[in-house]
Every structure is written in C-alpha cells, then in structure tokens.
Length: 140
Image 1 (tube, rainbow, N blue to C red):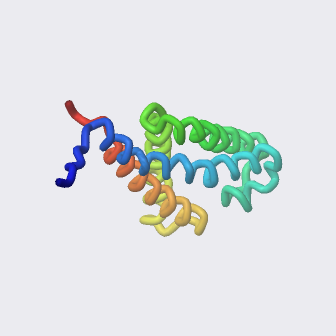
Image 2: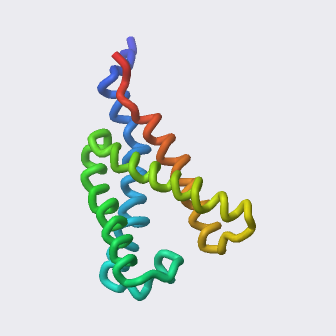
C-alpha cells in the first residue's frame, strides 16, 4: 500500500516563505546595488534614482537603499524574522504613491520619473503586501 503525505503546520510554513525570500532577493538587486552606487558616486543620482539631488541627499537615499538591501541577506536566511523590513518598504512607498505620485499624475504635473516611480512603487506595495499575507504565521 502507498503512504499518505501529511502536511503539518511546520512543513507548510516552510513552503509559504518563498514569496518573502523572493522579495528579499529582489531587494539585493533593486536596493543594495543602486544604494551602493549612490553612496560611492552621488553625482549619478539622475541616472540611478531618476532625480537630481544634492550629494548629501543622494548619499542619504543611498544609505537607506543599501541598508534595506544588506538587511535582506538576513531575510533570506530567516524570512519571517525580517518581515518588518518589507513592512517599512510598503509603508514608505505607499506614502510616496499617495502623497506625491497620484496627486501629481491627477494634476498632470508629474514628471516621467514620478510616473515611473509611482508605477514601480505601486507594484512593489502590492507584491510585498501579498508576500507578507501569504507567509503569515499559521494559526494554531
């Protein structure tokens, strides 16, 4: 006779963390790399971040992005323990979309950079939020 496969909360929870791991991996490329570039060469801000900024501001953004990317390495190892990292990204990107992106687009004053950031940030907000919901702790 065949054996039945039983899925327990511990085995099911391991498979439900892959969306978090995907978010952390994307952070390594999408946050750490541009962050490092902005820290090392703030004059490249228009090419990297799509906006001209004073070197101090470019480095501040670079430090934030690099930190998010670097901390994502730990998230790859312990995905649930670092969910707050993704939550911070959802929060600041939601605020940007709601206070800068959508009002500028609605008024017809948004630059192509703002339109692009708004679209990208909105996609990340939806994706990261879905990953956080899928990977929530199983109820006992």
